[in-house]
Length: 197
Image (cartoon, rainbow, N blue to C red; front, side, top):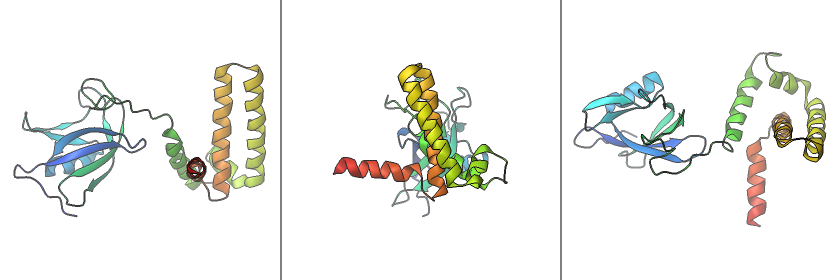
């Protein structure tokens, strides 16, 4: 849809963390800001007070890496999906509403993207690709090994060790699911479905 700018040639831009879905901030963009954002991959806005473009993070280092720009149903508001490299608000808060933007669980969605990239890499180039090439029996064996190591860590080792082993288990489980064309998203959907029952 064509962007419907206001009389000043501006359009409001809502910025959302692409991984967590959290709304981070709102600012204004003009055609030049949108063009620069697309060209550089870093989200750039128009400052109404300074009457100039500004790229988020140019002084703080807390940039927003562009994922997509979409218009709403009327074309008069933008949804900018981005990956933040730090707090989005000038106050140092994660969002301009003071909300926490915890990306730790959201990394599981990012992991799926990483697995997709590694699966497409040339044979043998990554550990993930080697596991996928070995097939479900080999990956299933690794999941079993990691499950045992996780239980041992839970019973007799430090919390850090338990977290390390659990991370290995989740990673290998994600790879095992992929050998069947499935993902952690399928598991998450099933858990949500069970919760609603």
